[in-house]
Each structure stands twice: as structure tokens, then as C-alpha cells.
Length: 395
Length: 181
Ligand SMILES: [Fe+2]
Image (cartoon, rainbow over the protein chains, first blue to last red):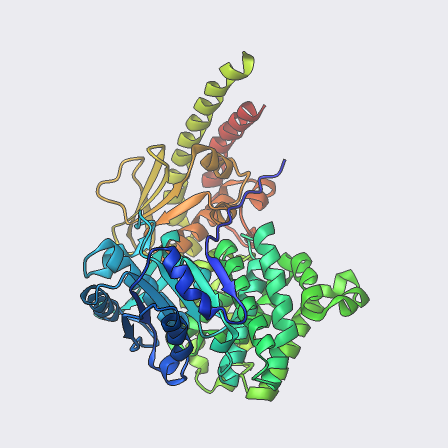
């Protein structure tokens, strides 16, 4: 008998496809919510993405009681406190987060305060602090990458102490994630590319790291297939709403996969690089993915080889001898990065970003070794190992 | 019935085994931090006076060590002088047994949701690396390869320490054989 054991949990209702936004009023009513508040950022509002959400609600006679559109790219404890104040003043009873990772994390954190009470969000930091379900909470993602709509984590910066506070609880999961192709239709090319590479990395790491399990594997492979088939088509034709929906679904599926089986060294290095050099997360993922797969190769040869089927399709897969499939999977990812570089100059090396100095590599390596995701990387990583990967990713 | 009578004996044996292994590991953690520079490079990053605990939920056996500075660890037995800074908790004695009898790697146990971290994750990551290194020291290579992600290419430790730890280990493995039989 094997010692294998796993857990898998995703209670989020996924509402996806054409006219998905129009389901929001019905779904809110089903949770007895009548006074929703929208949490979003200025970019989302300026892009006109709130209009269809508001229209969908008003047409059903559901009034959006309040709109907070000032979430910064790195959300903070004081922002969370302010929004909770507005929520209480306006007597709201539910939250709709519209946006990318930051708006969604902010929505999660605000939900803690307005459900549990108080003004000090730091008090609820950590794992398993929450013991009760929170207020009705919906998420409408406007990027296709982070997968935050299906994760039980939020990160909020405590600006006074200068630290990032993590919050982990299954109660942070929204009641519903609304995936509507209209929300990602106007995403600029380089953000489309970087966020899709984040989703691809979530799925690839979920499938090759230590906590992989049969259920998350199914989501991961399906997500990889969708990104491989649709990303370049969308890059060439940004108004391809079917392709946009495929990417958005891939992002959600990859999110379900990695929130149940964790990520590895690509994320450890990416988190460290983001913190030190302030590069966008998706870009960091794209930078490191092939080099980390090469580092892990001998530990993940079998699962990585299997991914070739989903990256390149049945013809390439069957024409490639089993012993070569893992390497060809890595080449497929490199090929995709080259194609993205051609279309929107998404950097492929640290040097190409123009924002990383070679003498910063040491500190990136040091910080990466402290990152929680390194625990689930299939190979043990020493400082020298991390440096070797960083040097390969340099140029 | 035979099965019914065996069950409490099994669980008693498992508990004693976990208690014994916590003792072995606690002492070995202290020893390794005195002689092994690689370990000290990890532990030195912990704050001075930092208390680390491994515990079986809800009130099972415990292991407590303190970082007394410059990477040195001090074994406190199962009683902490003050509230601990980092706690790694096994959800059940059965899970602790799997890990401490080297049937499941520490990192796999994390991956399998057998354990919870209470405290700063970056310290937990560090302590997991120290535990991996410790296991590769005190275990014969064959068992160590099963217990840790990777067997380090270079380990130098005084033979005396290794043999001392292995004596404990011998007692321990006999224990496992008995319990598993
Ligand atoms: Fe990510």
C-alpha cells in the first residue's frame, strides 16, 4: 500500500461564458444579499469595465450601493480599513471585487473586517484564524492569470511595519467567480501575455511539484492545453472573445490546481524578484519557468514529459520518443516565450527586462530560500542552486 | 476479539515511539548545530531566543528547541520556557509516526497536508531544511534517501555523534518492526 494521501477543496461556484455578468443579481439574491459594494481600481473603471457589471445589476432592479475604485496595485491595511468603513456606513451586505490580484485580495480582506468586526486587519493574519463563514463575496476577474478568484489566500501590506501580511482561510474563497469574456477583451498585449504565463506556470508547477494529486492534475493539464491553444491566437487577434474566454477559464482552472497542490521554485524566485526589483509577477514567471524546469528535470522527467501532450498536441507527443518528451516540453515553453517576445517584447531573460542588476542576484537567491513555496519544489534547493538558476536566467 | 485488543497496544506503542524519536531528534538537533556549519548557516538567520516546537495535535508529544545565538540550538525537552515562535503540528499521531519512522518525507508530509505551520513560513522553510539535513546525518544512507528529498553529497560529522545517534535509531527501528508486524 502506498503512503499517498491528498486533500482537494474548491467550493467556489464558477459562472462562466457569454452574458455571465447578468447572473450576478440572481446569485446575490440567492444569498439574501440586497446591498452589494463594488471594490475595484481606477484602471478597471477607466477601461469602462464596471459599466456592464452595474448595468447587469440595475436591469434586475438591484442597486449597487457603493463603489470603491481606489485600490492601489499593492493593497494596504489602511485601504482595507477605509473600505470597511464605507461598507459599514452605507450598510452594505455583500462585496463584489472587480479586478486583478490586488482588488481581489483587498475584497477578501475587507470581507474579514466587515464580517468579524474591528478595524485592525493585522489581527486576523496567519492561517486558520477565521472560524466562521464571511459575508457574500463575488469575484469578477479582469486579468486572466492570478487565479485569485479560487484561492484561499490574500496578501495585504502593513505599510507602517513595511511587511506583507498573509491571510489564509477557506472562508476567504468567494461564493462565486464570474468569468465573462467582456472583462478581459481590452487587456493590453503585454499584460495578456504575462498573466497567461502566470496561469501556465501555476498549472505546470501544480503538475510537477510535490503536492500534485489526481484531481489537481486534471485541472492543470486542461489549463495548459487551453493556454497553449489560445494564447498566440489572442495575441494576434485581441478581440477574439472565444480565445479570451479560453484564457480566462485556463486561469481559473490553473488557480484551482495550484491552490490544492501548491507551486515551487519558479514562484519562490518570482516572489523574491518581485519584492526586490518590482517586476510584475507574471513576467517573473515567464522569466524563470524554463530554467527551473531544467533544474528540476531529473526529478520531474515523467510528469513533465506527459505535459507535452497538452503543450503541443497528440501529433508532436506521439512523434517524440518517451525519453525525450520532458526536454521537448521545455523547448515548447521556450518557443512560446520567443513568440511572445516577437509580439510584445515580453522579456525572456533578466537582462532583457532592463530592471535587474547582476549584483542583485545574490539577494534574490537569499530571499527565495525563505519563500514558502520552495518547500514543495521537487528538488532541494541550496543557495548555490538558486544562484545557478538565476545566472542561467540572466542572459 | 484479537484485533480489538491489539489496537490500543498499537497506538500506545506508536505514541511511545514518537516520544522517543522526539527525544532523539531534539538531542541530535542540538548536536548537529554544534558541529555542522551548513546547519548553522540556516539556523543563524533565526532570531536569538527563537523557540521552535514540533507537536502532535491536540496535546500529544512535543519537541522544543531554542536558538541561543550564532546558529546553536538548545534542546528543551517537551517544555517551553515561554510561548513558542514557530510550531509545526502534526494533525494526528499516526502522521507523526509516518514521518518519524521515515516512511514519509518531511516535505511530503507538508505537501500531503499532514502538518500545519503556526508562525512565520520562512522560518518553517528553514527548519524543514535543517530537519532534512539532520535525517540524512543520523540515518543510514538507504533509509535517508527515503526520508529526505536529496541525500547531500558532502556530509562530514564526527563518527562519535553518528554512532550515538544510530544507537537510538537501532532501538527505534526495532520499535518500528514490532509495531508494524
Ligand atoms: Fe503565480
